[in-house]
Length: 232
Image (cartoon, rainbow, N blue to C red; front, side, top):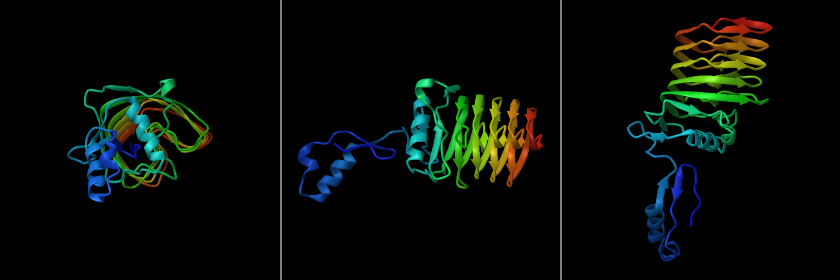
């Protein structure tokens, strides 16, 4: 028996083949029982399919363990409509950290993600930290996100591409708090927010602090803070 590794899953092997003296037979035995935790191949033509909330939690776990998923494609199943990530038993954690950012491509298929995050950790949102190789598109956020610094409904700290998303969530934190993104060093396009954004310093309706690019986006959110506030 071989334990699961990353996105690879394994069925039990026959001992005769697994313990063969032939390296070729052993390798073929492993290949014959290899499967995938996610359906699909992770390519642009056949992306890994995110079936339900548990798959989102699993993706978060794999990234936290060091799987960046650079050049890997994910897509939520097309009839999902809503993923309730606020379920207590799920204990959902934002995808990606400063040490292990998410670097893949994520297509939400128009799904609404309901969040109820309440943490003292930095980098909070549906995604915590995304690298410059990442892209996120075609989804919406509802519910509430309460974090520390670098807090947004979609991404806490964003370096990649974010497009065709919107949020109606309430977002609160300390510094670098935004309706979509806490800190943006990437590109944001065709987005909007309608909600309430609360922070201390660097607080905005779309992003808390921007060193990247924003295109065709707007906000109708209420923004509250102490210093360095902005509508966008």
